[in-house]
Image 1 (cartoon, rainbow, N blue to C red):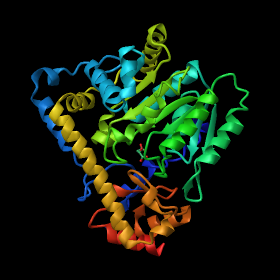
Image 2 (image 1 turned 135 degrees about the vertical axis):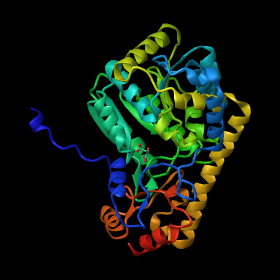
Image 3 (image 1 turned 180 degrees about the horizontal axis):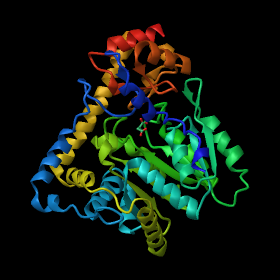
Image 4 (image 1 turned 45 degrees about the vertical axis):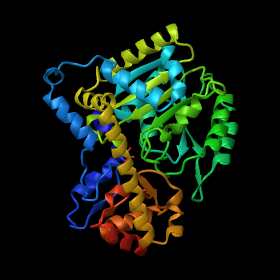
Length: 409
Ligand code: LMR
């Protein structure tokens, strides 16, 4: 039977780096994956994180324990991440913490959180999920791998603009008519929508959340870029705050938050993130959810890795490092904005679908597949096939080369 296995397609984002690595052109430029690089093209460690590493390296007790973490992760990490997310970032969450209504597992970054969430949901609650069109290409892969049978896309982007009316109409038309006995899930990008960079306004989010509630859909918030929009970690948490407005919303099948410290602490390879499930009532419901999440993690990868979560925990629990971290994130966002400003000086911005409205790590150029191919084949400039360009891959030594090529193409 192994003879009959077909070739899987290469990953739409990471597959390109494999190609980039063997490209011999000295001018090659990798603008694919969302990894933050500084103006020297380096993936540098955030100063707050470097200091936390030093503390960890010097701490005998913390550093000698190479034993397994508990299945649900490091208890201190859990406590500090919960406080960061549901107290600092979102005061609406304090009551939920007091009522012990939030189920939590440390996960292998945001992708791991999505995997555990989708496995849990497909086992117990749902078979159908809605993603924005377009979305991060790996979303569908993760949900399919974890038991989701029906993958749907709602209108998100039309003619260079966010299309909220189209989005709401799609939900109204399709999700309402579902014959499925299970409530459908909907994935929402918390900020810096990947790939378009276009986010709804608060008023638009309220309309969308109202519709989601009316249709009894289950919200799954994917928060991979907290802080990279405005440079302010707290401000960027607006979608979670809105969703937890208890005077307006109740989520009878829970609200799922998949969160990552990859981008906003630069802990990519350490795989540090979390899944939290806001349960409707706490008590037995919460404890049962806890127990099932634990069982899923044990069956998937047993327990999460230790080092990165210890580092993140030190940042979150040491006041001066936490302040420094907020500064670090601000600096990252400022550099992303300055790269955009430099591009705007060199290019006809309007022809790039007015990227000044786009937020975060990427520029959604609007280039079609054949233009992306030409950039890669003729200039060794690598973008994701949908025209997404990772801004921090640009720096003072390559921005002219890339902008010249973009203009020509
Ligand atoms: C991206 O979209 O580039 C990032 O989320 C990294 C990844 O894993 O695809």
